[in-house]
Length: 201
Image (cartoon, rainbow, N blue to C red; front, side, top):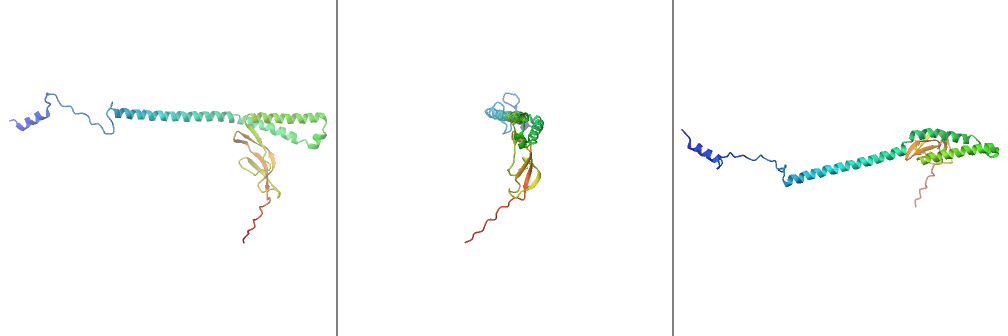
């Protein structure tokens, strides 16, 4: 026995041509259909974003490389320069060992030797300066622990406390960095600032 209602259900679900009906797959609203204008615009935006990020990374790499090359040129001789400073110190010590009176009263041979040592020291300092190494002498300046190393204190009331009054060993800079701090003597207990009078009318 057949149910007449059931036969009607079959006729409603079947296609008029007799072929089965295939339903379209469900597409999420935020994912446009492949090949559509929205999908192409989205892909273009992503590609543009990736390109801009890559360009930014390349520019950062270029700047970093340029900075590293510049630092290598400026500071690559640091070890060599430190070794050469010992020679400069010895030349200075040799010149300081000869008193001024002896220089004036010296015979021509000794004068020529002293002048030769002075010329050698000047040439060495010029060669260092050409390569970015500069000598500095902080005498009379306020003590700065970034550039100087205090070796002792000197009681001197004629200058403000904390002033460099003696340089034991000159300091050197390479580029903008300290190669060797100056060894100095610093004044202690200098003149105090006079108290300002309180004028009240």
